[in-house]
Image (cartoon, rainbow, N blue to C red):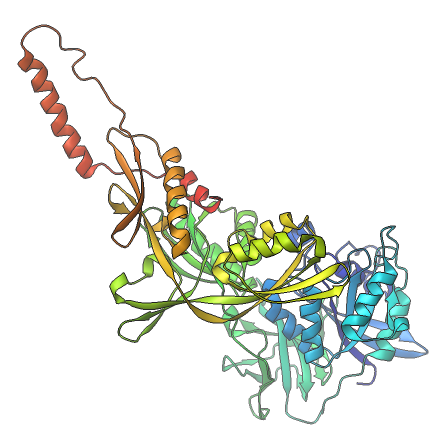
Amino acid sequence: MDHIRNFCIIAHIDHGKSTLADRLLQYTGTVNEREFQNQMLDNMDLEREKGITIKSHAIQMKYDYEGKHYILNLIDTPGHVDFSYEVSRSIAACEGALLVVDATQGIQAQTISNLYLAIEHDLDIIPVLNKMDMPSAMPEEVKDQIIDLIGCKYEDILEASAKTGYGVENILDHIIHKIRSPKGDVNAPLQALIFDSMFNSFRGIIAYFRIMNGQIRKNDHVKFVASGKEYYADEIGILNVNNESRDLLQAGDVGYIISGIKVAKDVKVGDTITHVERPCEKAIEGFKDVKPMVFAGIYPVDSDDYEELRSSLEKLQLNDASLSFEPESSMALGFGFRCGFLGLLHMEIIQERLDREFDMDVITTVPNVSYKIHTTKNEILEVHNPSGMPALNYIDHIEEPYITAQIISKSDYIGAIMKLCLDKRGIMKSQVYLTTNRIEITFELPLGEIVFDFYDKLKSCSKGYASFDYYVSGYKPSKLAKLDILLNGDPVDALSTLIYVDNAYSFGRRMCEKLKELIPRQQFDIAIQAAIGSKIIARETIKAVRKDVTSKCYGGDITRKRKLLEKQKKGKKRMRQIGNVEVPQSAFLAVLKID
């Protein structure tokens, strides 16, 4: 165990984490030149294009130092705020962390939140200043920021450039000297932490784990504590570029287990693996079920593709256990699914993957969050969809989820950022100057206000400088109303939204105007109304396309004309009763972009 080092890399998006991992793999000879490609650990096309790590990866490197043979396990972490629980499990599996900070940008919000996670788990932290080869690097200024943040010495901060390979050998030496070797009792009962899982279409679910205590052999009878499922370890091994099977793994090792698991829900990130005959006394702390935060309806554009969409979502769920979905139907859009996501980036990725990997054309409804509704009978209902809300006279009060958001930006943009947060019903908690021109502002905001376009607006009002990180802080009572859109008196369920009372009028007004432009004219008048309960708050009318029925009737008695007009009147009356209004798909998409 003295020769094992388990570490992760913490960084904000685009600070060079994946590039540094590439250099470490090349320097230790883990990958040869023929197999190597940039962003080696990011194996999804989406990850390479967006430049973010979506799925965490782990890999083992061998390194000879001063005549001794060392094993270095790099457990990579995703870089986005939506995946913070997965980051915390990866950190729990390590003893040390490389804190990578971009020398041109300085410390950003994600760096700080992941650093706090690492300090909570008592990790040995090695600060690395990356992108030193860039002409715009500000090493002195950024070093001061790092010293303020973690209180290290000036000479402890390593300078490196992951792109050119400068300073990589120095980083490897520090990993061996500064990061402690794993502790654990080989003879104790087996206790292993699952930090990730993968789906393989031939072998089933592959779980990645780190052994805290004990040892595991091939064909052992093991139990997953949180899900209570028991399996036989058909194959265990270590994580290399191509996984290598082993007969025995011991405390301190990082490896994988294949046991023919077919259902993604059976393997939960953060769960503990132990033996059935000799179980460990307690599971590893910190496990929790991942709860979706943002909900949206996903419907096939062509209603015949419903079953195909179901099988696509099931396949996606095998690779991504944090996606949840259940069937729902809408009068306007037909049959579809109500999906739960970790956040907006997660939602965007799922949509993109449905399109690329399964070639599915889908319509996504307005994203919303889950609300707790307290009824007059003292029941608490959890509602993910506005159409599932009880009538107003049964509701006592509604609670909505709040987040604590930390925004780090240049102090020049503080006014614009504050205005944006206050417009979104934010409550300011604190502001701290990190340096003379960098400020950290903490706001409490309703989650429902930021799921729409908050991130884009924040980036544009700070010229791309502000970085943003949040965690859910709990539920608070709020004045919310369900806004319905009625077409000729019939509610269109896919367009209904839950909205803050004070914003309802202006939103309803804009919605009616937008729909008036988009819905084609019919042979009869169409009334578009926005309503809260039975109270109409806005209305627009689409005028009928008129037809002159008396044009072919000339000469003779007036009764001939009257007869034709009476006949048309009857037809119009019948049409208004059975005539339905077709809502084009562009109308649903326009609601998303109403601002």
